[in-house]
Amino acid sequence: MFAVVDVAGQQLKVSPSERIYVPRLSSNVGSAVKFDRVLLLADDKMVKVGNPFVRNAVVEAKVLGHVKDEKVIVFKKKKRKGYRVRRGHRQQYTEVEITSIG
Image (cartoon, rainbow, N blue to C red; front, side, top):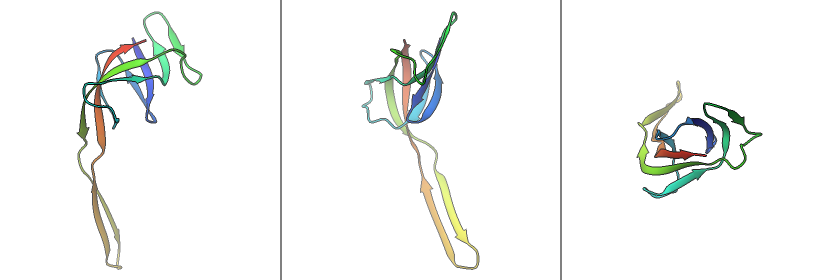
């Protein structure tokens, strides 16, 4: 069984007991989260495709922790102008474990 879920504008294919990283959520570590924007729901027998979402379908997950991605360096330069800017950025993610799809 698997589902395609829209989480903060990203479409993710998830299955039970799978660990995924989603954009940072405001939930606390150890709390349960429900994703109700399910685009597709499939198992061995049938496939349900939403228009745009599948009705009464919910994917439940447990928040495992908050992490940061590797640093990305943003470097800007204009030749012959003496303009150089170096900035860094670390994207924040939340690690969740899918507990049930229904």
